[in-house]
Length: 293
Length: 329
Ligand SMILES: Nc1ncnc2c1ncn2[C@@H]1O[C@H](COP(=O)(O)OP(=O)(O)O)[C@@H](O)[C@H]1O
Ligand SMILES: [Mg+2]
Image: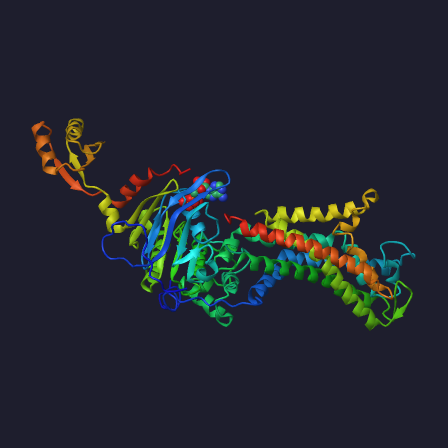
């Protein structure tokens, strides 16, 4: 070991020299978190799997065009405009594979660090528990966005390659330009990310309960599925509006003219309520937790 | 933080001068785990500034739990503590940047390289300028001799390299206090020596070093002070000379009649005599050694050799904490 450098390891500037703490936005740790999440091979593999779907759907539709009304929503529109491949893929992935990917990332967030012991290293740096939770939540939401955006981009490209791409006829029958429709697609992406933000908060909370990341991931995914199953049981339709998965599919409102803002607002409000419940719950849990891993 | 002069309130007579302020103080620090187990029981630590404090105890005696409480990772059931004069855990965000820590062995992301792992930790430090983070990380890696393996994935590191990376994390910034939990665990003698040199270096540069170990021999050479844990309690605390003084004199007699000799010792009122293959050993206590000689001769015990000695520290350590092998529970 080198003994050349007296610069580090010894005492700082002077005895009791106060450590000056920066406040405000914490981009360094956030960037580090993004690198961690987005460079992780498992997460990249998840994104790759998600991206296979628009390709598969595109190729299948090209091979044999579906009859009107067959298959998932938007599928029959794909042959008339490739942009609909984006919406078809999101519709296909939103019930299961997207929430699964989001459950993996958010369930991992705290439990993964606890599991390998890096949680204690971060806390003694020191990273305050509140800051850690904020960065972890932001990281999960960004991962959700990246997942949805990757699907959208691949869908867009495959749609351009295999199908016509002129003016777009909306669900309400109105026709808008391809460029205008792209803006709508961007809004759809934002809405889908917002829909997953509620699940991120739930996953993060579950993640603070355990030191076993796979358990947190599974529990979060199960909660998403339970919510969707409950949403499909008509006998309990009184609770449907309160389920976090209920408004997920409402992004179709963005493909009408005029846009069905009311349904979108309800969806955003639902997620906001879930975030407002589960983020503070995660905070309270982490704040009082003994870090013994 | 003010440079207040803080005199510790526990009035133990101490040989020689010691700094007026302490690097670590705890009063009645206690941890009872939810299961009901008391892992740390009313510990009063007093770690003088500038000292190299060996925190000793067998496995399971409560060292790691104490360190976790010191750093605010685990909440204390009872008691208070201060680091560098700052009340914890309240002042953690202010004082921890000045504290380098290694808790319960190294822990890093297995699929990241050594440098990336340190960059990750460095990015969490809001008191360090971001521009110089690469520089800090590279210096720390160089200091522990890991520059060549900076890019290698942590998963592929040997135990020794992992331990060094943990030390590099503790040495990322200039520190006033290092809290290191068993930094020599799993290292070969060469690695152990290198760690000792690092501790010495940090101490020379003015840092207080608080280092735990279950092996006295591994850190005895660098320590100025020791605290000994046993079953969650601090059973000894003081400077190394004080520890030596706490070990009373004992007499070792070589004879062909150990039973007779031990009978004589018993009657003289020494500590309990222990039979050895060719003699007997006992704590002298207040019995003068020449009286022992006289009595042995008077009782016709042949004395081949009679030695008055101090037990070495390892023996004393074992005496304080009980024999090894059985883990404290
Ligand atoms: N999370 C925990 N829950 C319950 N008991 C624990 C926990 N962590 C440690 N202990 C117990 O506390 C005691 C002290 O452990 P520890 O502080 O790790 O000792 P050391 O570091 O000296 O080996 C042990 O008996 C251990 O079993
Ligand atoms: Mg330990």
